[in-house]
Amino acid sequence: MSKKKSKIKKIVTNSSFSKIILENFKGYGKNTTIELSPGINLIYGKNSAGKSSIIQSLRLMRQSLLLKNSNTPLIPLPPTDLSLDGIIQFPEGIEGLVYAKDKSREVRLGLEIKRDNTNTKKTLLNTVIHGFKVQKSKDDNFADLTSLVLKRDSLENNEIKNETDIKINFDKKNWFNKEDKFGKFLEDMSEFSGPFNNSDVGWVFDETTDTILDKDIFYENGKIEKLKIVGVEQLFDEIIKDKEKNKKKIDIYISGFFKKNHQKKIKYP
Image (cartoon, rainbow, N blue to C red; front, side, top):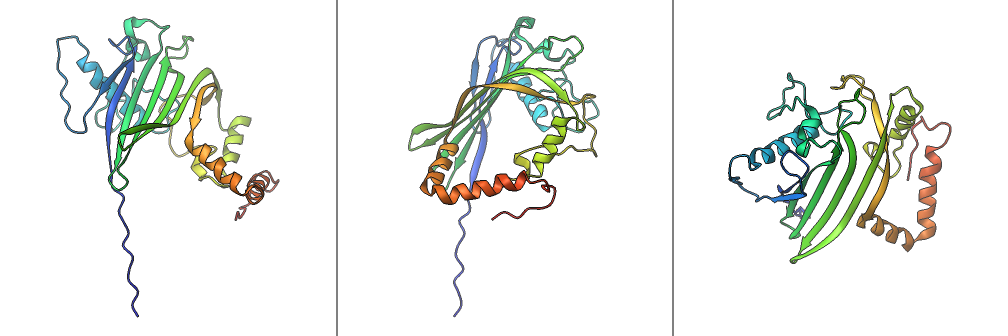
């Protein structure tokens, strides 16, 4: 008897930019949200009304996200020989982007991405907002990341539910390289395969590619202002269903990593 092949449903998603969030960027001094349609968007208005600034913000965010091996999340002045379409140069750096050139202000750039799932009829709205300030040190002309906002809302049956809401405020920069204790710790963590993918924890230093900035890497101390993650709540609910069984699994993951011979491959159940 021939077995019938089961039909696999294709999950179709449509993604588009749905909002641009600007604050203290060029002529936008107040917190401004610009709503976008999935198709063609027309921007019109008087001269010097801020039309070009909207396009510039998109190009700036795009090149900052696409540039690899960078040690700063905002690139106002990318290399001119970079083969990347649509790059934009701000020779004056972050200082020239601040509203009224007021260095005390925090520039906030953000995007909301709308993702429609045609199978589940569910829409996800993912938002990321970076906050920057001009560096206090004259020797450091890179943008100083001051805050990060991550949000996820779901829209189903005309009802919006907030699933994730995170805001982190950052402190001073701590510079390091792969030879420092912190750098070696990150490389050790990258070998931990536990319940995560290798890319989820730690850091692997890429020696084959030069960084676009002639500096080491840095980390920043962060203070969590908001922390709401529905996925974590769901994970804890699953753990509580069988505490003893899941406790053993967690113990195996943790003890396996911290063994002295952690450099050897450890098989996890």
